[in-house]
Image (cartoon, rainbow, N blue to C red; front, side, top):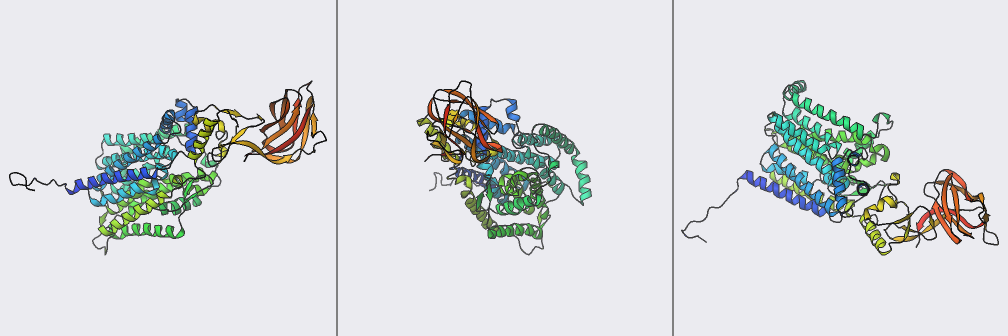
Length: 609
């Protein structure tokens, strides 16, 4: 319809650059919605529960913040976890919102970085799509223990890279200070932020110098020596702090470094499958890691795509091949770190967990951009070969590739184990337990350890009821030694009467009076029908006492003070042993009347049906 005056209103049209920026913003929003979808059904898991336990049981002090965890120095991560636990330790909505907010910030700053590196052109959206939807981000955007460190680390690395490239283009103190400030922010969350430094200097060496390698190195020193001195001092100061506070292994003492096994798993399988949107299939290991488990066909096809992309960058671009040194360097650094730490204790299979190469979420798409697109303001960068017979960057190839990548990433995300926990769901376990404790608050609980899929058995005593159930905020009647009926929590989080799966009994059978023996004043030892060794055993003594009597039961040289109540009862107590024992002693005070011992058994605690 023509407006009064007979002239149409002018149509507002965005120029190409603004449309690209708008499209990048829409990609970031879509990816954030995608990450919100992937968080559906996710709750705290494994290390998260220990983090919450510490936050609930420990006041907010400097010592709490700087206490290392498995070699990680993460004061800001501890602080954020403590704040969440202070609000509600069982509510995952707060961590989920923080993960989404962190991802939104990561997406926004990554979009800004790529637009500044490669310009406001449509091809820039290709590496951005990979950076936003990549499966490399799955652990860091679903598991709080990884997210609280690695999402801030990625944000810091992106911002540091942005400032660093500005410094390389025109060295100024302000950009150098900004680079160090962003790195410092990342180091407040995790020391792995230092892995970004090789990426920064490779950018300088490969794209902001020229000539043979010796000439490049001399130019690097002469042009950027201030940055070398500043970053060297910065890293040196941090390492002094890290070694003093957090280093908990000595690589020199390791005689069996599973280097090649880790290289095969971390690079060959995990990276090779996730780089193209895989792995499509996952495996949960015995140490509860969510590990890539691609089929051989999928892995072979994925590596074929990766190699085609790399080779095409060499055949169709000048200076395209050098870009792949950036992800390769970071991958090899992670291989070395995993080899001298986690893999020593858990095997090289642990490297199949993508959280040990989260940096690939940045370095892989960055390399794709550097391999095929010109880097603005660089001395040297990728440019098309005029003699190339074909190009992989035609619009149809790129569009199909991006859609295929997002589709594969979506399938991989939908199948990620943390979204599909059933019998090993911590949320179900704690929900059932909280309801049971609310309904039966006075039940005495034997202070057992939780299932191994909930928290590590080697972390004892942090895996017992006293510590693990602190997050529920309930007063519990916990007992190490119990008389008569006592309760335990089964694998579904429900309360059950404790039963004993008997393995050993007293060597002597009962007499006519139903007693296999009578214990009088002083110490008496009663033999079992076989030896006992191991950490998980419990001892059950059934007895009849004429009066209340204090007593000591000695199991494997460990004295347990108990009270024998008058009448017929049973007492249950721990019976672990590092060395085998085949007898149990009972000591009664002087003047005590004889106690009828009706049954003595050793076995494992099980929930009664």
